[in-house]
Image (cartoon, rainbow, N blue to C red):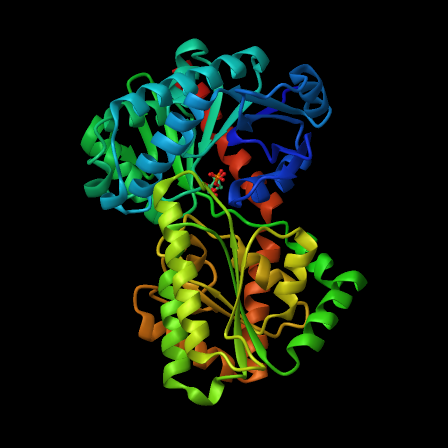
Length: 473
Ligand code: F6P
């Protein structure tokens, strides 16, 4: 039977060392959480980086491989130099800021580009070891933009799909990239190219038209002898997993304990990886303005802010950590009382069930990225509100805002607007909360992650069929 080969930079588990032992932990970020659910239903193997640099790692690699193989995971091992240049370098200091429309944070280095090409070739070799003639090769995200083209050269008839979990920038920003042709030639090796939103699709189509001269008709692109399709597929979540988790007795117990501690103080929740795209300083500024302008809310509401460590070796992330620490310190010293802390700040990751308890506990979720491909945290919050209360404040710059129009939608750069939305959320009558929440829940239940996979794979079948018809003409 044909299988699906999922390929992404990270596997859904990351390996690290703790107390001199190798431990496997769930990987951070939307791709791993989103796809881990989808892959369960498929006959698939998953190829990805093991999450650490091989140098100085003396454990039995064969044993680790066997252990992962049982979970149908195939690890790629990279040395420290490759991790620096490929992951921290080209992926996260060139592509990540550029694709999130932060050109001034983007740095371009030829040596990092060289290693990015090399690592994409390493991934290609691994895929070729596993790919059968009828298998679907499903590549994910910006670390592997060259991979569709590399595989196409070796296996001209392969079925290749590419899905990008982060935004695609406008042509004016994308054109900055010195290697723009090579990058687009890589992606356009796929039969189906997917993004979260129609805006991303539009931007990508404009770039391939202006840079590679490829024209499209309703998203179908003709490139010499081939055709391929570009379309939007907004990623959903495993809706019932979050809903059921929020209803577990153990979750309720945890919520009860937190409630006892916070008493009548309302909780506003924010959860993100530490990243400058997430708008954390702007969010803190908005919360500061809110407390300044509305003194009657002091001691009545706290911001519960969870920041998950991420890309800690990249300088911009280190700087951001210091900025956030300082801002939290300033707000705390300005407003704190003996009985009340305005910002409850945690710099760590939490297991799923604790997150579920936080979702259920919180009266408001404040999700305000400056730019985000989709953002699944806001969807998880909505799914966890089984009594339909709660208000979501959501940035218009998150892909999810296109679907969740019943949230309070704000521009995250407009901190005054965000401060006003916090007040509106805290004062929103329960019947309005329920009306908005149930609309969003209906949508998320309908377009969950398994529906997303089905729609994506169906679209893949359609384009493959069209190609076959074309070949017969
Ligand atoms: O969801 C977007 C994404 O960039 C994924 O591709 C990535 O795995 C995740 O965020 C977390 O980032 P990282 O893998 O660098 O820890």
